[in-house]
Image 1 (cartoon, rainbow, N blue to C red):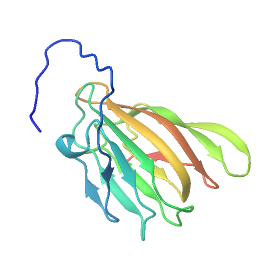
Image 2: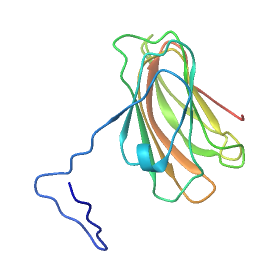
Image 3: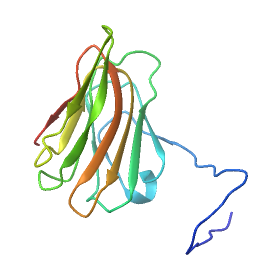
Image 4: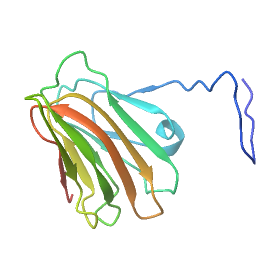
Length: 150
């Protein structure tokens, strides 16, 4: 397959196909080349797994989708390179006890989100600029996700 570079708008009548990235069960350093602009399938972990994002780059997106076959007994943790690269925004928490709420970052230092014992999630994280990430999506669990400083 050949690579093509575009400098203007692109229209595809048949759609674009992008293969998902199946993440291994373990801590992973996320890269723009491998994970950016793709769906990253997060496994049912054998332990808490930490996914470390690269430095934010405006417009580069990372999408994490839970791909386990049952509710996970562990946590998926997504961190930025450090507290100076923080999250802005929040996620919708779909409590498996039939409650719905929102969980937000503090917008000035929270660089870690912990998705506790998820039954499902679909989280998108986009580089807002060279310092911050915008985060949004949803998490289904009996335990609320949590933002924190690293």
